[in-house]
Image 1 (cartoon, one colour):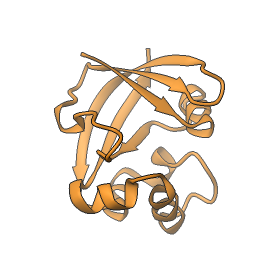
Image 2: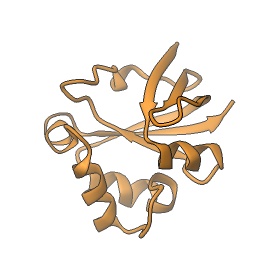
Image 3: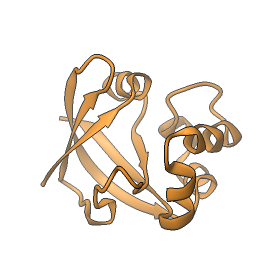
Length: 118
């Protein structure tokens, strides 16, 4: 299965550079992607929402967590976050600042999607 998702510029570049190896996502009122249905081997087609550049990644795993802190502790901030500082507190703040994420995580938890460039 192939899923198409928009991605902000900084995480797009970090994934492309091989720095960010896990994408954190939650269903929101505007993003109806069935994250609970993603499987190893599926493809995510990312589109940079600033430059419109595109790239494909293969899904290596999908882990579900009840909250951002649990995800960051289990997966490692260095694998999930694209910005600095790479701390759990910054990561929680960063995810909560994304439109719909604070509410989405409370309702649905958060998915850690392990990825590699294709």
